[in-house]
Length: 469
Image (tube, rainbow, N blue to C red; front, side, top):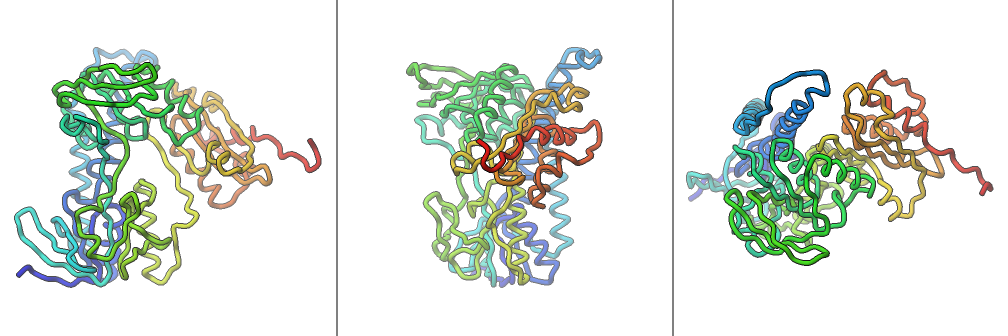
């Protein structure tokens, strides 16, 4: 008979929300177990956020080396060592995994490696790689299952063994010709990095623009950037059929407004979205309900339909960002301690780490128009921010939406150098309900990127006077 163990806190998945909840509950004296099938710490430190930004920075160094003469620096021929790029990334990941293991040891939470499958409410069977089986029961159960890359149902695609971001970050040589399927954040980040590391890159995008959820001026600016860097972007183009194997050679049938044609490449990266890891683990036996897309149904306090069971992070349908998963942890932690927090009304920022970065918080113009919310628009090119001239990084713009009825900041978008950092300033102002005039009149250090907020918010049109046409 399998070993059975009772825990106060049972967490399935060691991603951002799961690990922090595990460490916190264990330190508070609760007997806690965290079950993880593969990646200690979840996807972010192993195969997603941090590894991708590591490789992207290597690509940035390559880009700067190629521009050395622009800065008065003389260098020799540029050579990309992909094994070295990968080694740097792996070294970082190894260090992060060790850090996680140290935190588990210090907290007292038990990390159990193996595949979990529910056999009853609040009860899982965990099978380790060596075949050992344990039965774990929890007084309270928390699901932190994450998501994985979606592979579209295209003839020949799965047989072609395409790259996802996971395999792309493990390449030890530069692809001769990389095709990227999808025009979202992952595809955009990886396409630019591959190009800067020496690949020929073609993007196949079914929609009419890159970054489909962003305003047309943002999408247009990214498209212009990519074309300037030599990335071929095929919009309104569908992938119909694939022959061959990624890494060995591919023939792909595509369709655009002119009809069908065949293209060839060496590698194919699929970046067309995510699907939740909720199938095949017996959630029905746990009494947990899923929505039509396979995400776990939760209320605003992240409670599932099953008593004493919560879900956090991507699998709960939360926005797919590590920083949101961390906030899910804080909501659950505080409510377990008698608080009353919820997901309602969260102001969620994001940053896409292309170069330059794209960062946004709050509404963009498309969303405001869809919701019928009137706004005043301020927009300036990045070259009006003097710090960009010292860096020779003048591409992009800042823009803000301000209410027509008050001085409330409704949204902010930055496409430019250090966009993610300057966005945090505006987000803080929005959370504090500060009027835009507070940023307009702030004394920021010169020369910094944040100083550009004075220029931007000085460009906000005056509020129309009542009775004036």
